[in-house]
Every structure is written in C-alpha cells, then in structure tokens.
Length: 197
Image (tube, rainbow, N blue to C red):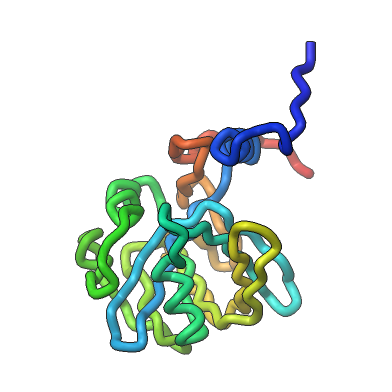
C-alpha cells in the first residue's frame, strides 16, 4: 500500500523532515568563508550538488537561523564573493558536528573544530588542511527560490589528498569514505556496489 501526502497540507517542520529523510544520502559540504574583518567561519551544509561541469559549478542551499536571520556563511559570501567546499571523511565527523552550532560572528570556527586553516590558492577563505578534498569557489549567483537561499559558485581550484586520488585523476570512494546525511543522522559511506553504469 502506498501512502500519499500533499506537502501543502503538512506543517513546515513535517515537510522539512519528510524531504530530509527522502533525499538521501546528501553530501556534506563543509563550507569555509571569511568575514571582511578576517574571522574564519566553517559550517556544514547537506544541500549541495553539482550544477554544471562546463564551467564547473556547484550549489549550496542555506537555510536561515531559527530566528530568521541569515547565517554567517551567507553574510560572508555576499561580502567577499568566495568560499571553499571541503569534503570530509569519517574521521572528521566530530569536528564537523562541532561547527554546526550557532556561534557569535567573531568566533573562529576552525578553532572550534580543532582543524588547521590552510591558505587557498585563489580565494580569500581558508581551506581545511585535514579535508581529503577542497574546492575553491567564487560566487556566481545568489537565488531566493523559496524560503531558503541557493548559492552557486564556480570551482576555481581543486585540492585532493593523494590517498584518495590516483595518477589518472580518479577519486577512490572507498579511500575517501565520505560522510553523508541520512535524514537527521550521518553515515560514513564505505559500502560500495560493483555496478557499472
């Protein structure tokens, strides 16, 4: 038997919960930005995907804080026009969760997470030295299609730890062991199916 629901008949929280539990797994974009005064911000977002390969672009969707205020990530993006998406492996999950809280704007969230800031090549925001993949991005568009804000950035530089990429540029998901979001839970993706598509 199928259960069918009309999203318009659901509360906002029920609708959000239903979407989060249905669209899985969602990659964690551990996003670093820098404020105009140089404060480092680091926050995880699970609404992330590729939107173009030529030019290479990706999107982040940012919800607002509980009080309706914009998150520091979005404020920094508007002000500086750049960000870094760090892809984390399972060993960084605790550090990532530590940055999911709400902190005052002057708090360095790299310090909160206990990770190492590493200067990016072409953008102002630092990347996470411990992250196996980091993508330096420049802001292309900020869209407001509904309650949340969609940010589209062009990937300007890619950084890969040599443990997750081979000499031909192939990324080994087994070595990467990326973290995904399953509803309100997290999972390390380490079980792979050998299906050729």
